[in-house]
Length: 322
Ligand code: NAD
Image (cartoon, rainbow, N blue to C red; front, side, top):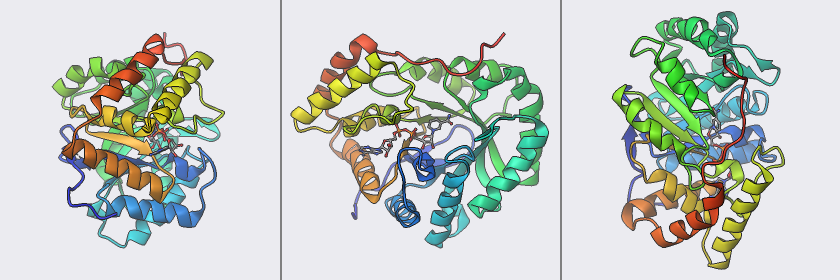
C-alpha cells in the first residue's frame, strides 16, 4: 500500500525523539493474541516500517521473551541504519513474576539487547509498577536505570502501568528529567478517556506521553477480546454491542476507536498491537484518513452513546499501595 501522505510524527516530551503517531505494539508477536509465525512477524514489522511507523514497543514479559526475539528478527531484516527506528522495551516484569531490584533490571537490559540484537534501546520502561511498592521504583529501580542510561544501553527512562495515580506518585518524587516518558494503557479510548485529566500535569513536566491499547486490548474489535481479558462481563458486553452496531452500519469499530485515540495531539503516539500486514495496512490507512479527511464524528458519538453506561469503567491492577 503506497501512500502519498506520510504518517504524522509527534514529539515525545523533552526527549527530542519524534515518534510516528501510530506506534507498533509488539506484544502480539509474543503470541499473546494468538499464534503468529516467524515469517508473518517479520513481514508485519517490515510493512509497518515501510509505511512510516518508526516506533516499536516490546517487553521481556510478552510471550516469555518471544516478542523481543521476533521484533529483533524483524528489525534486523529491515537492513536499515539503527537510528531510523525507535525501540522501547521494559524491565521488572517477567513470565516468572515481578522483580524490580537493581540487580535484576541491570541484568535485564543486557538480556533484552541480546534478544533484540541491538546495542541500545531508546526507551527502557519499568513494566507495570503498580505490582510492587512504588517507593522501590523511586529509590532503587530508577537509580539503577539512570546508571544503565550512563552506559548508553538505554537513552531514556519510562514507567508503565494501569492505575493513573502511579504516574503522579513517582513523578512527584524523582528529580525533574529523571523519568522521561510514561506509558499508559486502556485509558485513552472511546470507552475510557481518563488519561485526559492527567495530560496538563504531564505536559507541564515535559514528560513524553505514550498511550497504548486504543482497541482496549481487543474489546473494540469485531472478533472481540482474548479469554484472559480482565474487563467485567458488563464492559465486554457493551463493547460487543458497539462492535455489532458498527458492523450493521457497514463501519469498523477498530477504525473508529483508533481515530478517537489518535485525535488528541497531546499524546505523542498511540501504540496498537499488530500481528499481520493487513492490520498494519488498516491502522496506517486510518491515521492517514484522519489526517486528510477527518474523523467519523457521527458514528463515534453514536458508539459513545452505546458505551456511556460503562464509560471509564476499568479493572483492578496491582497491589494496594500504603
Ligand atoms: P490493542 O488495543 O492495541 O489491541 C490489540 C488487538 O487488536 C490485537 O488482537 C490485534 O491483533 C488487534 N488489532 C490490531 N489492529 C486491528 C485492526 N485494524 N482490526 C482488528 N483488530 C486489530 O492492545 P495491546 O496490543 O495490548 O496494546 C498495544 C501495545 O501497547 C502492546 O502490544 C504493547 O506493546 C503496549 N502495551 C503496554 C502495556 C504496559 O506496558 N503495561 C500494556 C498494554 C499495552
